[in-house]
Amino acid sequence: MCGIIGIIGKDNENVVAKIIKGLEKLEYRGYDSAGVAVVSDGNLSRLRAAGKLKNLIAKIEENGLSGSVGIGHTRWATHGKATENNAHPMMTKNVALVHNGIIENYRELKFELQKDGYTFSTETDTEVAAVFLQRELDRGCSPRDAFKNMLAAVEGSYAFAAIFSMLPETIMVAKNKSPLVVGFGKNMCIGSDASAISSECKEVVYLDDGDYAEVTREGVLFFDKSFNQIEKKRTPVSEDLIDSGKGTYEHFMLKEIMEQPNAIRKTILHNRIGEDILNGVSRILILACGTSYHAGLVARYWFEKFLKIPTNVEIASEYRYRSPIIEDNTLVIAITQSGETIDTLEALEYVRKHSNAKVAAIANVKNSAISRAADTVFYTEAGVEVGVASTKAFTAQLVVLAAIAFCRNEFFLQKLQNVPALCEEALALYEEIKPLAEKIKNAHSAMYLGRDVLYPIALEGALKLKEISYIHAEGFAAGEMKHGPIALIDDSVPVICLCPHNELFEKMESNIAVSMARGKNIIIFTDEIGAALLPNEAVKIVLPNINAEFAPILYSIPLQLLAYQTALIRGEDVDKPRNLAKSVTVE
Ligand code: M6R
Image (cartoon, rainbow, N blue to C red; front, side, top):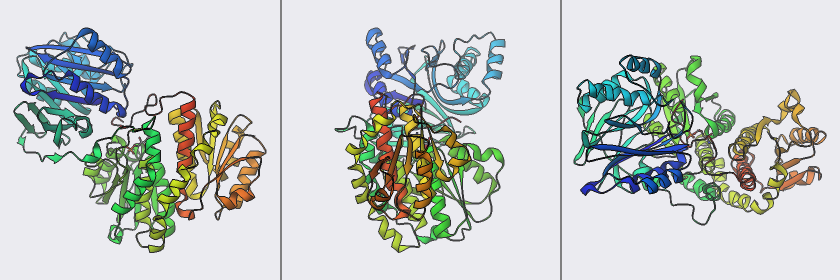
């Protein structure tokens, strides 16, 4: 979601081009408008544009914008449409401000400011923060006091960065629930994440909730929520945060799909998990969203079958609102690619408040908020994932979860070692999968069926298709079809079935037969034995044989390729699908 960057140039260097570069690095977070503001000779100026960054760049080229201190923003619209007028930075006479988050009490603040004679020109919640600062300055406050008063007044989530006409060498920042880092390099920087400023800064400070900082050319003053000056630890920017581009691939998503064998290999190598993680654990609670939630659903099968530990998997965005009970001796596992998902972070906060449970995180982004909030972190070694649709991070999450599930089971841990090579074989099926996209591309709806550990993969396959191709798709537990969803099947609805020759093969075979009796667009992902037994009227793609427990990892791959190819031939923006954000930082 929204991305923030700010740079204070040394030697009066014009920082606008660098701000744009930083915004390009933040694009992956998802956005629908962008803007930059600078302060120069005591004057503030800004340019904003709706749509992609190229629109902002064109405006800057046409109108010119320069300054050695500036802030930039990519906005993912929450309050107010994605128009130029609602784009950040918000600007008043003396302040320009960018914001990531939601100001929940914006209505009351707006009313109060209107009563004081201030007017508003946008539909955003953010504008109240800028206008509040202006009122405080008009009342004679210093920028620091104005900022403090504003922070005391706003409720909700925020990462703020503000520049002031009367303080032309400073960027003021504050954080509550939305991510923000301060970077140290030749130029001082601030950013929503370390990757955005990694070309400028080799060290960063991760701000904590309630922190406030004044960044200047000379350095940074940090304050805690009681405005006591504090010291903060600098962390080197991890090489893993720096994306190496698309290489020869047309899209990051395809590159990331193809990187899976190596990502899995590396994740296995770095995650030899000791049995002690389960010491005293009598329950497991998994909290996650989206694709990461699907990884958790697979893990439940493994944990209950092999560890014999009752396991709950909860959608993090729902969890804390139903006053759940956390039993003693629960191990909580948060799963997240970005490590920033606010729903998961808030669910963990609930856990902390209401229990003494041990919290582990499975995260892809090193030093991310969720990894810092956990007692133990297991990193998926998938490397930077740029495509909004999660692929390699998902299979790497499954690998870490398998390493936990089989930490007492050397036989399966050995079998896990074979998975990367099998994934290579699955990737080699891409040419065979490509024509299937033709069978799906005009469908108004698609169904994915699976059973047991492959049921969550049906959910994940459907999520991939809808995210990037915008075709409605649903995953179902195949046995549930007859309880309602079967009504949806007709000749126009592709039914995508996951059917290796496993213990439930006959049951799944019947579910396929039932679908084939009602529709004609049936695609089956199976293995050699399954293919020999399943009807020839269906399209069959034969995957390598794999131990049944690890089928979720392998069977994810053709579904990713199918979704990718379908979106590609429909001409969609595969890496940056509409309305979606890679990092979900608002509730
Ligand atoms: O970064 P996280 O894993 O916490 O993100 C959770 C979801 O937002 C994410 O998996 C989302 O569903 C992806 N777009 C899926 O491709």
